[in-house]
Length: 253
Image 1 (cartoon, rainbow, N blue to C red):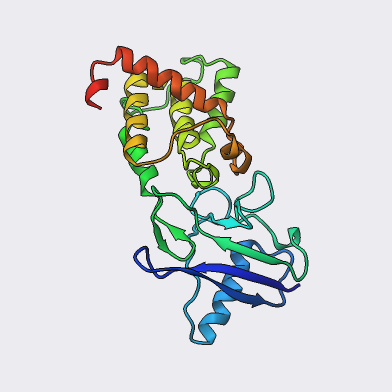
Image 2: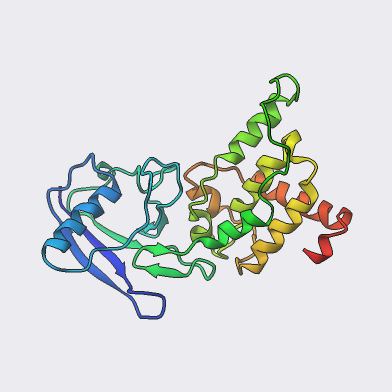
């Protein structure tokens, strides 16, 4: 099959960018979107031209490194799928695709389709962890957790931090990401000692990173490749308010 790709090309955040048109022929329908870009880059390299920069790592939908807009939709048209898992058979022969990076102030552009998502790392560093003594694993029955809470925690823990939620949100909010990280620890017994302070610190850091505010539009959930439920945002707000009232350090966070 043959595809026409209009790709955003920009050398760095300080230069102006523009869309460039490329034709990719002999595309295998079983290729992933990233493999299609690999084919394009090989052709560009052979012709002595600059390859398209895009981020990737595991290419198995696990690491969260990859991600860009395809025809205005984060990760493309297929629900619950990252661009590294999106195969070309979901497009028509001769179709034109528009590829552009995440657009958010908190995700400054690095080059072409790659953006800097270190803001997510700083939110995690602010409180997305538990402080417990290490040692041998406790007996599975020693810390009882109801199935409902365990399932909810695991649902939230699936977040891979790709940033699609931010890119899709009209406000560029990181509430789904932050809510998922706060929820999956806050639902488990191991996360209770630091639950209040964790929420205060992580939400405070999220605001410092200049993400927008959540207005419950729900676009974040629609494009999330791991289908994180919007309820995690409610849990984040609950824990943040409770933590702000109870935690002495909240005012200094």
